[in-house]
Image (cartoon, rainbow, N blue to C red; front, side, top):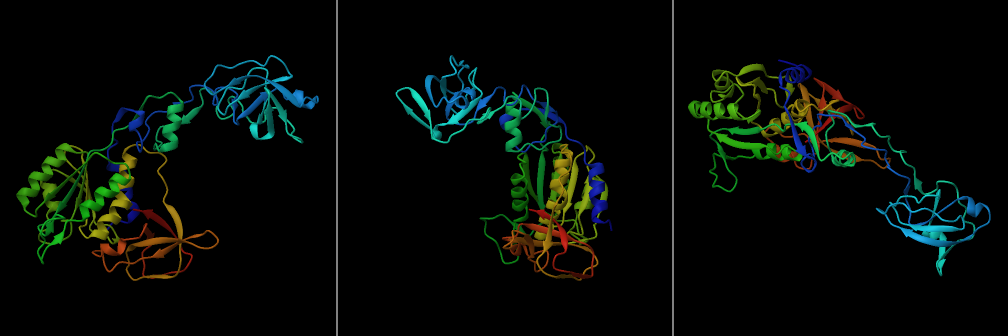
Length: 400
């Protein structure tokens, strides 16, 4: 069996890079940028007032002037005015251009305004450029703001907008097909017999994908019948970038997925990884280039393999660089691992009185015990045992 690192490397080598598309900025949240974005102009583009108050020449108070005639008012968005006299001032609003001839702002809280004049409160001193956000102090025109490979969250979308980008070039979102297999599965809301189980894995997969911003997702359910499976998988291989299957990849008589994929021309990259849960994981490439992740059908195995392999691989295929590194967290107490395989241990996190986060193990009653995942935030990856990992052992945390 492959190690986790070997499986991860093979996925990265074989998953095709997704094409580029141009999208309106409002549709780019969660997308991966495929072009550099540069500053359209200095930021701020002018000397910007940061407090409501008055703008003045800072030399006037230093020369003993404490009462200034208000010449005019300048709001944000108005063209800049010019100070006519050092003994005067201009009322300004937050975000406005600093008027010409002024080099400081006094906040309204430090003033008394009567009969068109502003008087400085006792003890108030004025320094040049106080309460002024200087032009170009954030970034200069032409500076690199966002590099290709950046995943666009709220701050990055705002930065792109500030650079005047109405549209940006991003990675094409993959078209995903989430497919469950098995005769025993019954849809939520339908009558379930004692020998049947609910079709739940696919809903967990769909929720995880959508939480990570993937929207082009179809879903299907296929019975464990070779001809039906062959027909539906052929359709999905021809029409989707990535297939994510749940079930049918172990060694049982009705675990038909690897054989049917092979018959359809899919190339097996690997089958089985030295890990628990999720050992039967299968990965391959279809005849038209579609990537196929066939996840074990036990619910814990499905969600663990999705978070550990599939979602990071999708972002890598979209060109995200550098690859995000998993969080590190320490175990809150000793934990014993009996298996010789690497272990994925579900955890919740707790913060102690010093603000330190700890991983609290939430072991399941086997890989079918999906109920035990409720309230967990993800899982930690522990090296192969057997052995006991002490309190304070630092492991990588993968969030659902």
